[in-house]
Image 1 (cartoon, rainbow, N blue to C red):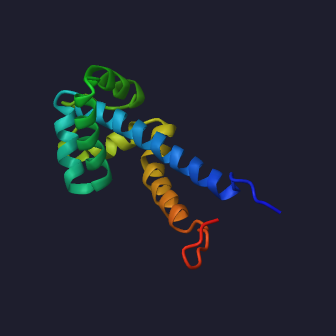
Image 2 (image 1 turned 90 degrees about the vertical axis):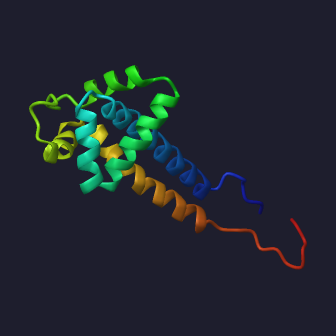
Length: 141
């Protein structure tokens, strides 16, 4: 009996890679836009550098990608819409900017923030542990 080429494991790996990519894209766009908010972006980058390597990565890489794609203004407006409880730069202390940003984001933002690296690691683990064909003496089937 011949197996179909689309194994359930292959579909699961593809879904995990797709979800990880979507979550990373959302995070880079949203946090890159947040990094472009005047004065608040500087406060966030300073606080994230000290307390959260994940947020620092999203802020720096997201800002770079958004600016290179010439989507800076769009990303900034998107971030302002998706972080509704974010205080203005004068209202927050530099040491609390990151925690306020994390609590201000919507539920999907929180899910994507933590889910992207977890889904990336899961996808990598599934990819490494996938079944591989057995080859003996150079014969290919």
